[in-house]
Length: 224
Image (cartoon, rainbow, N blue to C red; front, side, top):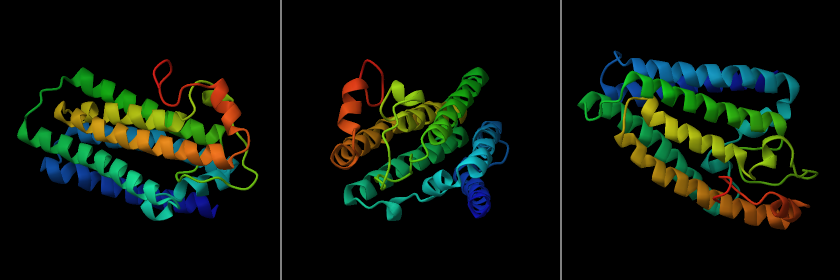
């Protein structure tokens, strides 16, 4: 129950921070794309968070230990800083794009962006449900098994797939084409994170090397 309360408080703080990142650069509250994006974010995460809190509170606690300070590996501290900076810069720049009027994104494309955001966040939450050891930090715990079922049958890092889909959808949802430029550093950060994480998993997680032989692709089927 404590994990659920902490998650609820964290979500409230997150929504406030999200509002600041979106509406301050936009310079207005008359920004329906930002309101729709925020609603999509909340609706996609709240229900799964409640479900995880009730069924696997330990998994929720692992997800809540996040950020550079929670990372044990030095490289991962820098990688997560880069990824978080890319995401927040993407949102702030997309909001400023709305203010400056550089992009003219049709409403249907904004809705498509919200759908992609929902799919990306939904996939991330599904990964936590299917793999209770899917932490927000790169680590291996005592007794941790290799999960090869569910979405892990298709790619080795489905949580990062969700993050990449969310990044693609975010600028569109916020009505910005220029914000798509931030996908490049964001995905680059994910690639560095995956490579370092796999080095750790291959060394410390029993059975992971065999799993990589069965599931060849890390992030995108038939590509990488």
